[in-house]
Image 1 (tube, rainbow, N blue to C red):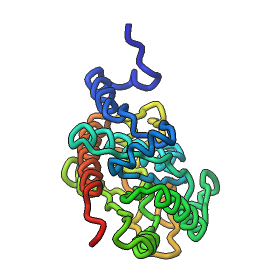
Image 2: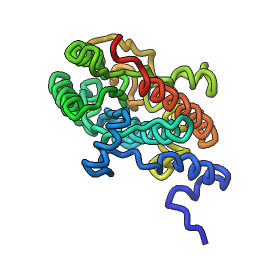
Image 3: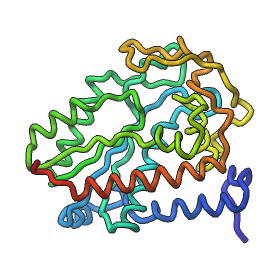
Image 4: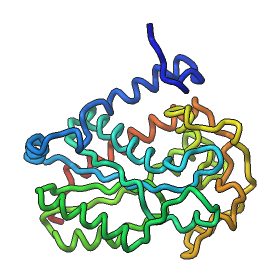
Length: 275
């Protein structure tokens, strides 16, 4: 007798099976914390790529939980790492997701945020990178769970310090391109939108407040505004329209996301660090 976890009962059987299969790659032991120090040393000897998922804790509209960005960053990295191992034989270690980061743009919603000042965020990440470098990791990928986190200067500083010895990679998000190709580019998005809500409906429907999904009629955001305040653009915290989200669409998006990120991880794992 199969007992599905709470929340999966809302999914059609075919999606439940696909969801289980989608995590089979992630079941391959890719978590940094699941290894002993000797096992990590052994993976280092074969050139394992280290991946740091950076998340944050902030409002995700009335229908998604405040841990969404952290959860998704770690879930994407683990699934992509497992897929890369299965498809390419890539050795990857995924560090625990960092649940804190700068979130000043969400303060005016009053609750749900843990705002880490940008300099402190960079200092923490720099210390983690230094720890990995000291252990001998030559290739490290920083996966941003929040699009507002600017880690470019950190990348440049690290790569200058360890020039031709070690290298940090800062992947671009594949999400917009995947949404435009698999979803509907005419549906506005930006935060807690139909893209992320579809992924949540497929991957963890128990965490979605279905009755709270509605179109807030948000305004177009100036993403380059250094004083960005989401409350000036949306009354609900959602940027875009989440009402087009479905679990079926989430399954399609998820396949594309995992395959794209796995391909990036494979590329970084063999990239020339001396150039």
